[in-house]
Image (cartoon, rainbow, N blue to C red; front, side):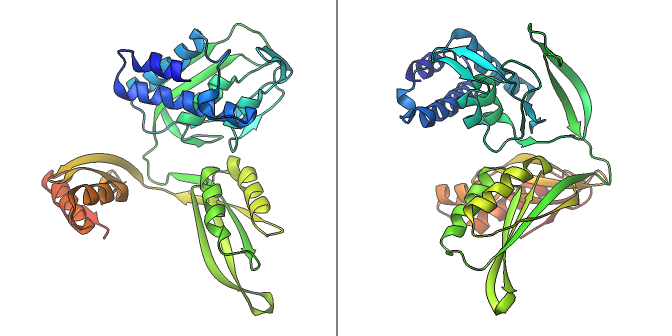
Length: 327
């Protein structure tokens, strides 16, 4: 790992490309380390460390840097089946590192009799994909294809679509809500459970105090997620809590088009999320983490950062309609 980091670090690539490429290799090293029960720095890459794998990861990172996409969506991942030859001998497909990297992601097995997703590909997906969806809604602008040499029962093709999210009125997400009621779990465990749920891909998680049978005070755990991730998140609830069952129902969520803009203030740059309705700005809100960072860096109350962001955005006159601020 250190040799690969040194090789990438000594290159003439942009700092952001070097950082993202190293992050992919670190993620891969962490997966291998968990499998071999050692530390990431002790991992020796075999097939992964070959020059073509370095080109794959660095090339993919450069492509994403040039595309400047806001979000990356991915359909369920085909892993393949059979066995693969590697430095450790014969390994079942998918490889252990591939499965470790794709924990929580929706996968498919057996459509082809060979390794359809390698650890290198899995590391790229794990590092860069923002959300796994079955049917993304977007206006397609460009399409790219990567074609493999091995023939199989399904096309050996990777297809990438570049487009914009639909901003038409009435756009909505199809999501799932998972719920369970608990009255017998150690309260200290809720923090751990929520962390596991977010790590597994939940959009949001909430706790609601409830009064249950026999007048017992309890807690309702609610999870909002993509339908493809519902099985994995259900497993987290069943394994990590004391519940014996999980309720699941589909929901539709109308959404506003939104974009992130960075605006300059006297304290530094702040990311601001602008929501649009019928193509016109409806309201804007500074991102909390940026405001928190600037407040700490400048030693001022955080409300001053929020006020500076409001003034800076108003001065830019982004729309003839005033932007309403949430305090």
